[in-house]
Length: 115
Image 1: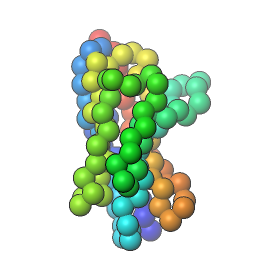
Image 2: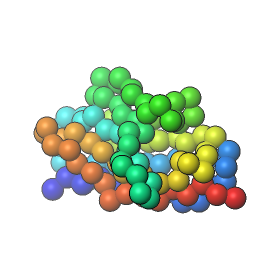
Image 3: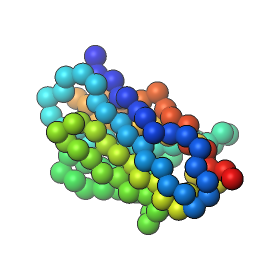
Image 4: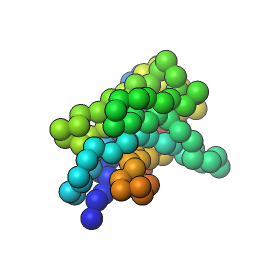
């Protein structure tokens, strides 16, 4: 069974940086579209960034010019570099992948931006 394994969450100071990683665990036939969503307390889950198999990238408006998504196809891993962190970036970050037309989600990793 295919799973998404996330790592890299934690506490970061305002203006600081953090890198999240997500790796596909299990056998997959081709490189899927992958990305990150986040959900803050009392709010709906929102798009952070996605990257398609062909490399097209889409960012949520609130993280444009601050966050960078990248991937290592050989390792079936996607990364999210969070720069210039703001308190409003505090949320549970979920890795996402489209595998065989199904949405697959990671368990989530907490990111807290606070001094």
